[in-house]
Amino acid sequence: MNDEEKYLFDLRGYLHVKNVLTPAQVADLSDRLEERRSNGGKRQYGSDRTRYPEGESSAFSAKSLIEWGGTYVDLIDLPRIAPYLEAMLGSKYRLDHDYIKIDSASNPRNLLYLHGGGQGAGGTMDRVGPRDGGQCYYRYNNGRFYNGLVAVGFELDTVHPGDGGFACVPGSHKVNFPLPSEWRTSKTQEEIPECVARVEAEAGDAIIFTEACAHGTVPWKGNRERRTIFYKYCPHAVAWSPCYYNADRYGELSDNQRDMLMPPSAYGPHEHTRPIWERVQAEQAELLQLRAATASEDSPT
Image (cartoon, rainbow, N blue to C red; front, side, top):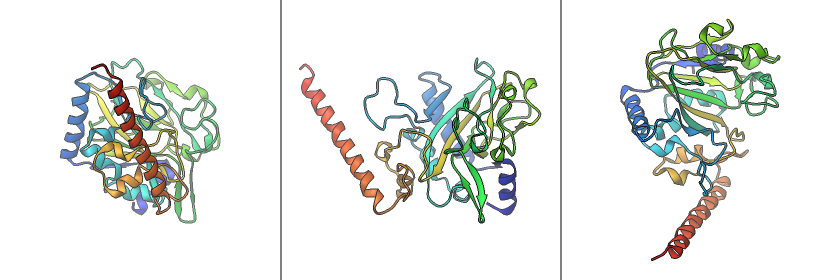
C-alpha cells in the first residue's frame, strides 16, 4: 500500500485496486458460481453469518463460499490483497464473513440503501452498526490505520458508467453527524444525492472499503448482471458476525488460512489460543460422528 493509496483511503474511505484477479481466477470463480445457480437461481450465496440455515441442527453451519473450493479458498488470504489488509487492520486480522451479491435490473429490491457512517453516525436504523461506532470504526493514529470491519469486493463483471454498482459517500467514515434520513434510500439513479460517488470497475478489480464509510449499491441499469464477491475482515479481537468458521469444514487449507478462520480473541492465532479452538473442533467432530451413529441405529432396517 503506497503513500498515494494511503492518502486516498484516509481521504475517501475506499480504494479501487485494479487487476487483483487474473482472468483464470475470474473464470474459476464465475464457473463455480454458475454451477450452483443452475440448481436454483438465488441472488445471494454465502452469508453474513448471523444465522444458521433453516432446518440445520449443526453448529458452525452458517453458509460460506469457502465450501466451493478453488479460488474461493484462495481469496481468504489472496497475496494481492493481503498487504492492504495488513496496513488497514494490523498483522493480526481474521475473515469475519463472505457472500456473493448479484444485481440485475429485474431485481425488485433494486435500490440504493446507504448504510454505515463514522463512529455510529449511521444512526439507530443502520444495518452496519446501529448503536455506536462498535465494530465499524475508523481512525488514524501514530502512523497507522485502525479499522473495524473492512470489506473487499471482487468484481466478476465489468461495471460501466451508468450501470450502477458500488457507491459511497467519500469521507463519511470520519463524519460526526447522522446521514440525513431523506438521503438514505434512492429508488432510481436520478434520486441519488450529489454527495454519493459511484465507482466503476472492471472484471478482476477489487474495491476495498471500511464499513465505517456510508455505502450501498446504485440501482442497476446495466444490460447484464453485476456479480460481486464480498470477503469481510476484522482485527482479530473484533467480530461483526456471531457465527464463527470451523476450518475443518472446508477441506485442505494452509496454516495461515486456518489461522484467519479462528474465532476472535485478543491474542489472535497463538500457541495458547490454537489448542483451545482445536479442542472445540475435535469435540464438534466427535459429536457429529455420534449423531450419525445414533441415526443409523435408529433407522429401520
